[in-house]
Amino acid sequence: MAETTLSIPNAAYSEAFKNIYGSLPGQTITPQTISLDPKTRESITAEVSAALRPYYDAAAQERQATALQNRAELDADAYSRGMGSSTWLSDKKSRESQAAASDVAGIYSQYGAALSEGVSSQMQTYEANRLTVEQQNAANRMSADAQNAANEMEKYKLAYEILLDQINSGAFRTGGGDGGGDNKKPDPIVITPITKDIVLDIAGVSAPTFGQKAYLR
Image (tube, rainbow, N blue to C red; front, side, top):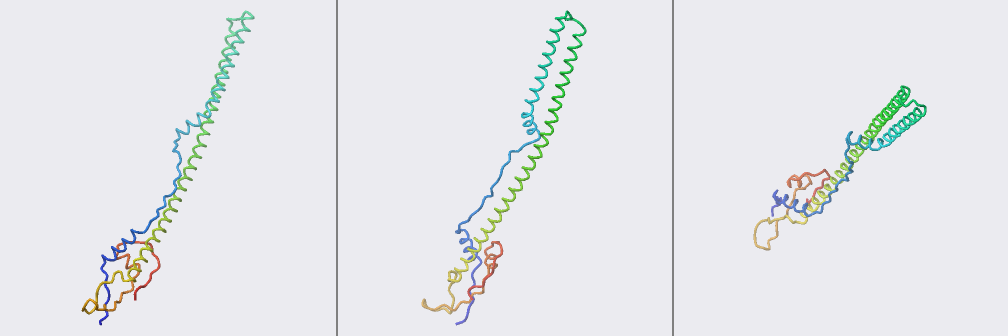
């Protein structure tokens, strides 16, 4: 009997590999995503202002109330002396009003400085947090991608091993030999050593590199 070499059609490899691969359970890891509420300078300014403004408004109102009380006391003192319409009284009240206005302006000047400082500080904190979140999300994606790639490699390897085991077991063996009756013993079959590169190339699949084996000599 002549020795023959079994030739498995490309379509048989491709179909078998894809069927095996498709039947294997897969596991896809979804990366954890950290979210950070988006903020702008305007929104941060509004937040800082809401926290600071009431205190400065209260201080300004208190100063204005003090000025009003002082002017009332000046009126009472002047009228008790019979100087209700004097230039002295008008001058004293005008000075009190000017002093109060100056103090109120100073209060809101301090508020403006505090607001600017607070916004700057909050913006720096927000940008630092945003960068940290972006870096962590990127690290989470990289970790998930690496794990998914590793899982995919294992799936490819398992499908490849199963395919070669099927070849070893004769699942792809078709007739052969010298002809004859139904009880004719087939000719011996020699199969060229098969590697994962051959299998994956024929199956039209790309996969990560792993160790090669030779089978079915």
